[in-house]
Each structure stands twice: as C-alpha cells, then as structure tokens.
Figure (cartoon, rainbow over the protein chains, first blue to last red):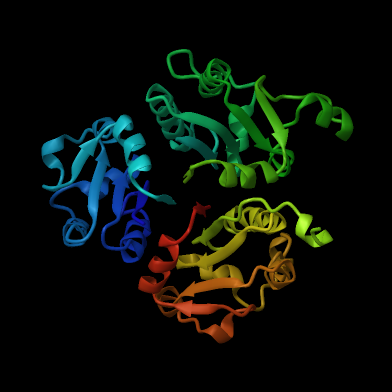
Length: 102
Length: 130
Length: 130
C-alpha cells in the first residue's frame, strides 16, 4: 500500500517536513502544498535532506502554490515534479491512503 | 472515487479551505464525487452567513455555497465546535436563547458521527488544516 | 435457525489512525481530536492513536491547569481503555528529543521507532491529523 503524504508548512517554520520524511516509507509520495512548497527549492538548508529522501520517495510540488509565492519551476530541486490541482486529485486515486502533515 | 473532506481551519487566516476548494473543484471536474465536507475546529467559521470580505477578493463562504448547491455536496458543521465558536443555526439559537443565528444556507449542523461515517463510506477522507 | 447474536448487522470496520503532533492547551487540537477518537470508537471502528513530536506532551503526567483557567482534559486519555481504545503508540525519537521517558506518561503506550510507526501508518484506511 503506497501512501500519499502532503506537507503544507515551510521547513523553516516547523519540523513537519522532517517528521513526515522520517515516517514516510520507501515507495510513498510526498506532495508539498501551500507554505510547504518552500521545501521543494534548491539551495536552501532543507534541500539536502529532501534530495536524499528522493532516493526512496517520489516528490511533487503544487505549481499554483509555487507561483503564488513568486517561485519558478527552475528553482525546484531536479526530479521533483510540478503538478496542479488536477494532478493532486490523480495522486489521491493512485495511492491507497492519504495523510496530511500539518 | 468518493471523497470526504475534513476542513479544520477557518476562512482567510489559513489557506486550508482555499486548497480544499480548489481540490474539490478539480475532483468534480474529473467526474469524482464529493460525498461530504465536514467542518471541524475553526473550520466551522467557513459556514458564517455574516462575512463581508473585500469586494476585490474571493468570498470563501459564497464559493462553498455555490459549489455545494451545484453539485449536491453535504456540508456538515460539527455542533460542538460550532457552539464553542458562536456558529448557530436557527433551531440552536432558539434553543440556547441567543439573539441571532448565523449559518449560511446549505450548511447543516450535526455531530462528529457524520465525520466518522464519511471515513467509513468514502474511498478517501482528506484533511485540510494548518 | 440463527442464534440471536448472529442476527446482529455488522457494518464495515475500517482502521482509523489519529496522529497527534501538537502540545495541549496552546491550541485546541489535542482536545478536539480526542472528541473525534471517542466518537470513532462508538462506531466500533479499529482505532489507533499515535503521539509524535509535541503530541507526546498530551499524555504527560501531572498536568495542572488551575493557573491558566482551562479545563484539564488529560484524565480522558486514561478513560480511553474503557472505550476499547488500547492502541496508543508513541514515537521514541519524539520522547528522546524532549527528554521524556515512558515513566513520564499517564497512560500505557507502546513506544516505537519512527520506522515502525511508518509501517503501522501504511496499514490504515483513514488517517486523521489535527
């Protein structure tokens, strides 16, 4: 059973992303939304931990939330897929269960 | 797929309800069903009939009311959370001797059992919170 | 002919997990999520609670709320057993980060590593986070 995790808080504000990555199993997906999109960016203090986690986890980031915060796709860590709300819906059907990390 | 959505934050202060709304619209456009949206914690504040947000910005409650009416979505507000936060429908206001009621049409007040039922009945129960 | 108890209608039983990551009193989530847990048990569902990050403080012994004028709801965690809610899990790393041990907790829990909790989470049908 592969789970879809969402993280909606910035890694610089809360430890949510950290805890999520500690508890997400290999094969799971993590979707960064709302303020969580900052976790998808290159060249931050969070980038290494996220890049390392990509060895077992598939990462996605919600494009509309990135754009709202003035970030562009080329600022996103290579390998993180940028999706929209349609893609979010599809992820929920493609995974067996869902956990929102708040 | 049949979805239940749990919204635990109020309008404007957190993005949660906006994200849920965008998700709901996308899911419906793809042919999925939103069985129930359950408003809990500060989420009950989405049901207010009295909000007057700035004209040049979205009216969150009105958006929800329109979506729910168009697609027959069951919009449930938790009674315990609502009472704490002064959201009352007419019968609750009368029962409690309060001078006004303030729940927008389409929302109905009910118990937490409706949330559990959504968890049981739906294929997915998604939480949108802080 | 069926025995009387064989006629009982059994609804579906799903695995519900409640993930508690917030400290009590600073916000209402700990209290209001406990209310959902109790209702879910009343629906005879398979309920697990995970306490992680600051959520471990929800079950810390010795809470005295007289000075802050709020209701001390921590005894409710001890009452969970009476509702057949016995699957309480605590994340070992969260305890250690906070200098706590099992002896500091007011209920019996199973302490697990994050990796073990991850396995447990994966088995759930519905996960609610507050």
